Image 1 (tube, helix red, strand yellow):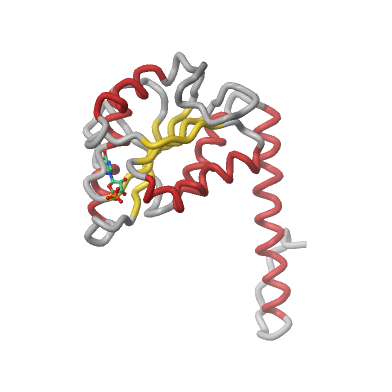
Image 2 (cartoon, helix red, strand yellow):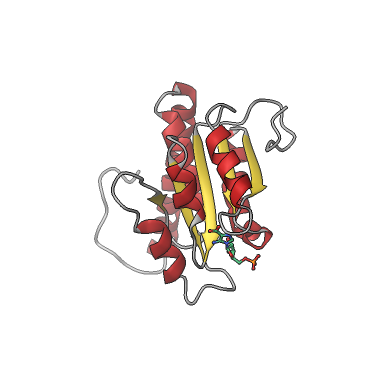
Length: 183
Ligand code: C2R
């Protein structure tokens, strides 16, 4: 029994952790993205500062429990992603959170981004848990053709959506430019 696992049907490939329950409204977006792609994940609260032993145990057992990528969100003095990365060889994606104790978000960004050489944390934009989810799926897609195909479909849908707005805007505002691949 995986003690960090939320009730799911398969062993999770993506671990989503955050320093506090207050991060959940943002971090939930990574979980929703995994749901959209049908990739199992586990989601829980782990804090380097407040639950250091739990953080160490989580990071050290992550790979053996079947995880392939970890997404870690934290705000303010955001040590969680870097500390987790220091205790596993799995790729760690950090989500800086604009939390209530964050001055303006830069503190969270820089504490996750400015890692010393040797222990990288792939840092997404402030509160960009959705992009963290996309990046995690892309990492898995490198060795999963079906998932890679789903990512292509996802990108095509995004492109189609943007191009439909081009037509909408063109009906009200003249523009000479049209790319030959737009149709
Ligand atoms: P509370 O809302 O619980 O006071 O937390 C959390 O990620 C949250 O954004 C405020 C903020 O503190 C952050 N926190 C960290 C860590 N643990 C909690 N940055 C850590 O270990 O890095």
